[in-house]
Length: 365
Image (cartoon, rainbow, N blue to C red; front, top):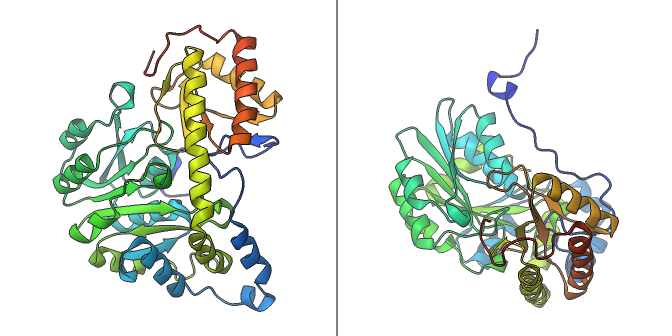
């Protein structure tokens, strides 16, 4: 009888709550206004002949490489950051190998590692979700073949310093060290320039967040030249669809659109922090386009999400993540989005008796 590989029998599944997402979508960290109008023009210009051709990745890769100031050979366009993670696992992990992640973090790291038959070593974040650099370094062994770090991290919005990340890469020369910079534009610090000076450091970027291209599924992986040659052998030559390849240059060229949106998100982030402070709700300062805060118990978090949905606002319950019991994550968008958010937020706080029911300030209660 046919059966899946043993490693897949205990594989956790990731089921994002996609159904019934009517309302203002502040639950998936998406761009709330959509892509640049330049991308829409590009879409309208596509012909049936364009869609009939197999996608050619190299010309767009060269443009993205120039945008990121790396050589084309150092960069691989991928089907979102998810494929970049998957390719690293398929390239460097054998059954019995170990991969290190800091928890809580993006769920797909664990899933792709386990799918490769490797063992996940989860390292809890320190108090207030601080990055546990010394504990992570202590956990590096000869079996460590991958270290995946989201920076800024999801769902906490916290960051590791560039010096700490470079120390980890230096300490784990036999492991691929992935720094996932999906939220780079809201933080502004990157390690892409260090990839050419390293033999094991990789940086991933996505065009799903600030660029509003989540539906096109396109990302980029940058790494050392000799390692990228190997990754290209593992990757499908047609992994990124032709529509995404045609539209990405237009998205990158519209810098004004991106800068305006980032400015609005950063202003919205400050406004939400102030609202949480005024209600005495514990939150964690974020360097991303979202904020994680605690509304009370796990039951309270579920009630909060449900009441916000009734008011037309979708937010994400993160109570099942390590250290996040009773926590909710809210995406930031435009000023208009934030006006709606803060109004619904205050009504929900008042309705559930959350307002001023907790000590004021950030940090774990």
